[in-house]
Length: 414
Image (cartoon, rainbow, N blue to C red):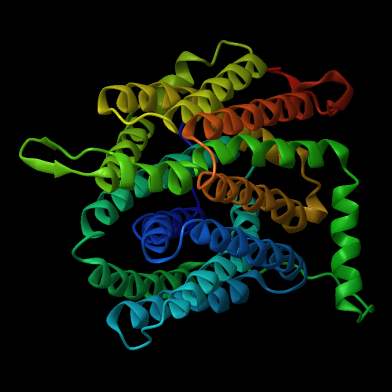
């Protein structure tokens, strides 16, 4: 049956593609840039501090999205994201030459993104129906990965010689995306009347209620621990490859560590683009909980092994296997996640879920700092052990009978 998508869904999917493209060709390479221009371990500390700032922004962003007009929130903080990129441009151009300005721009981008993401996620959820929700999230996943492939390719090959033009282009594109969303999104959310003027107390009481949902809390922690495995590609593994990978030539193109990282990301994403729907059909008849469990187990183990690998003949096959694990598990998780969210607490739950992203970055950032003191083998163990714990948490929270919802539609394929 053909599923029709509303204009709002088409608008948000287009925006998601462009925003992810901007991120993919800039932010991951900032970590490598900082690692080259700061003392050993400092880049990891900067990443951890950025996670802390982003964490607070995500909490506040979820509260704002539940209590204010989401379209306005998107405009304000997407514009602020452009300001963060512009600050980095000023640093790279020499107008604000001290490295601290680049760090400030990096922090602004991290905070702005997490201020508006809960509002964006709630808009997407509101724009879907039960009939098209799974398909919309599959499209979003597919589009996200396509944009990441293109962005990683652009960033990887522009990093050494065209970093300033790359960020200038990102600023212009971010402003275009912001205006496009405001002009095409037809959306207005209901805001609950509230007499309590103590905003901070209300904010924390809202998240305290979410945190009392033990199933949701376990799910979020599990998501963070297994996602951290992939995030180490952009922190520890990326920095290690930039320093240790011996340059090779493919089709007369020089491939150094930074470009090798881009090649791996492109392989990952091209597989997602071309194989997502095929693998979804292949695994459709299998029990969902086993598909998710073993898919994620392959995923975290593969990224852990890549933390020690330096050979293209090892890195590429591992990435292929990792991506297969990702493809069979992630779309199922995205669709299953929304079944756990109460209708009246969408943004707060989604924002709380978004904290898994920050916690995962924190775990990955700590791996970068820890890598300055221990060998790559121990980083691999660190990634795999935490990842396996995360997989267990996610599986238990979603599929353990004690936690199942009574909704028969939500449990029919378990």
